[in-house]
Length: 364
Image (tube, rainbow, N blue to C red; front, side):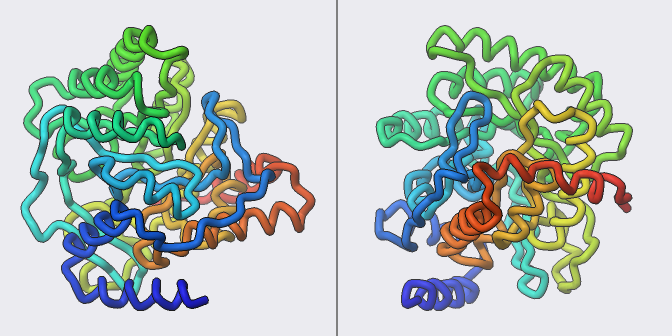
């Protein structure tokens, strides 16, 4: 109880600061090694196997929070079953001009137009190498530099840089904050992208026992036709899974005066849209392909609903900004309690039970 009170007070203090400065302080606190929340006891019922990886629980930290792999171990200590760092580009990148991160407190949402600001793959790779012996599942989200002459080549470079040391890789072609990036989701472009990154992965496979699992992160602002095209390509090229979804350009459900800021919206208003897209994609790819559900999760119940809508794993980011450092442990505990109460040996038993409910809904 005392730790939760301190967590609440810390959040109030951070809310008085510029969002980007507050975020920087949060990363520093996680790096310090000071325990920010009690690590939960994790039920064996939460163990999840995806892409040959054994996750102690299905809750992950989404990319964007720890862009430069500075604090994955601090995040794992909060109770996350895995952490995804990045987005990392081949060359260091300053990103878009400030201000570029906005808290919509009334909506429990964020808008960002950061633009893949990061330290570059050389620096991030060195950080990742230094913490390898610590264990835990730490993935890397890779992207393309804003001024790149060949963006697909940037993704190949990212695969070669991290394919031997990351637990998994995520190809991020869905950020709305790099002009033209989302066109890589178009079928012809996507076919070339996937073929080239998978070939790069095969090259790197010699340096590890098996090829690194490769996921694709898609946008929530896609038409039904575009979703069908993406599903066809990922199935044809046998990618290891999809992350659904990134931030949205839609402002549905957002009421804050800051809602008209340019950038991608995340947080609670994204829950409905991202869950609809998740369920539609589950229908399209079938039961075998792993899906990671992201967008608007802020409680054990919203985490469970993502799983019912088709997710094998789930990720949060904005939820922790508003729920604090105790939120991951609280969600993991609630998932375990639910599984025990319902007599489930695995949360896989409820996956897809609400797919039809969500997939039948229309995106505006």
